[in-house]
Amino acid sequence: MADISIEPVTDKRGRAAFVDLGRAFSARLENWVPQIRSEQLELIDPDKNPFFGHGRVQLFIAHRRGQPVGRISAHIDELALAMPADQGFGPGTGFFGYFDAEDAGVATALLASAEAWLAGEGMTRVLGPISLSIWEEPGLLVRGQDHPPMIMMGHHPAHYAGWIEAAGYARAKTLYTYDLDITRPFAPLIQRIVQSGHKNARITIRRVDKSRWDDEVAIILAILNDAWSDNWGFVPFTPEEVAYAGKKLRPIIHEELNMIAEVDGRPVAFMLTFPDVNDALARIRGKLFPFGWITMLRWLRHPKGAGMRVPLMGVLKELHNSRLASQLAFMMIEEIRQHAKGKFQSTRGELGWVLEDNQGMLAIADTIQSSINREYAIYERALA
Image (tube, rainbow, N blue to C red; front, side, top):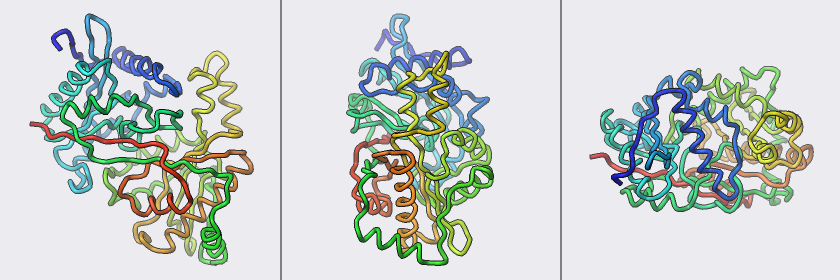
């Protein structure tokens, strides 16, 4: 590795080179969908991404004989440090992410540089890849490269896993996504559960109201922070991140695809569904100009035939492991399925990510006869 140099990114120009290098690596992959460059730059900009309000980040680029051959981020999330260790993160835990490498030697050098930076910051353990927040792109794709990723999902070559494992990393957690044929009615048992719920005067399943979007976002994030608070890898959203996420997501929100469940008038559960913007990005090759924005605008107004991804759902913790929680989930899923199939003429949906030990979600995915179509791995290693 004597011919490999690892250089820290220190300015705007370096961040642009970091993003462009990642795009070049991704362009080699079958089924890759080009993303909008300005949005990728925003995610690593300390002045724009509120993650930097509680995160310390160092980006690195590897060079060989003057040519860029890899990249990696090393970062520390102060909120993750404050979480209980038995929930996956906790004191001493740092992260790596945005991992791309030309070969095994470059991979080893990049990981070593990220580890050295983290150790210098007092970390005793490293997890990754997580880019940058657990709420953004967690995990390395280890199964499912044979089809394009959906909105806000990473896409990586299969050989990266071997390089990371060869550097002494072991799998800490597995995340799944589930594929669902939404043209097929659910089993009679689920239909009876849903019908029973609609007859219950205490239960209301309503659409998200974009006319009071900020209030709805606050409701959803309050439920999310409660519902997921005991999950592996949980880190709470900050008010700044709530506002940031709300602003970014609003253009892809269609009221018919996003539900809030109420019991006795009190919001207790939600389900978000995003039309797969990668459908449109593939058509415009990730370029809004000169004319891509026209295609994108039309698509945003009516994403006909788009795949649908359910990235987040939650039920208040007090209802966990109850029959009511499952009933609310099935009611929201069925309501969204009907609208996706009808108004948007969609044929498939995807649920995920789902933690490998989230028994409630695994049971729901199995009951609605969905099947695993992608697997992501998060790795860990102790730092000497």
